[in-house]
Image 1 (spheres, rainbow, N blue to C red):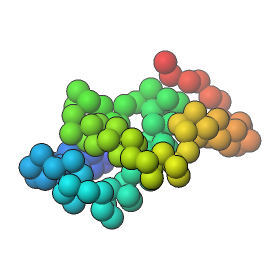
Image 2 (image 1 turned 90 degrees about the horizontal axis):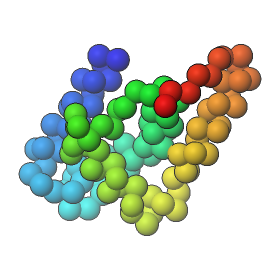
Image 3 (image 1 turned 180 degrees about the vertical axis):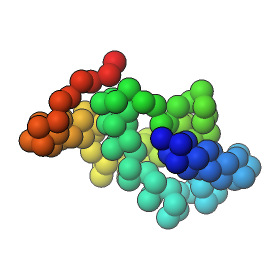
Length: 105
């Protein structure tokens, strides 16, 4: 978890260095945004299953706002799966692996 916190902190720092621009590369989404944006549904699903917040507005407000902004892009809405669908998929995979699922609320 410490490595995840360090990575999230680095992303928050990168957004701070963007000097108020909405995306990592500036005014429009670029390669970094698309790459990171593709894992938002999986990250949100993991948060739902474990109760551990990664994209937490209290700790990383710039990153949390970026994730919301990215998810609102028309292109992202067209291709990214719904978080609920990812949760359902992960639960199915875990059940098949005989992993006990205790959803955190």
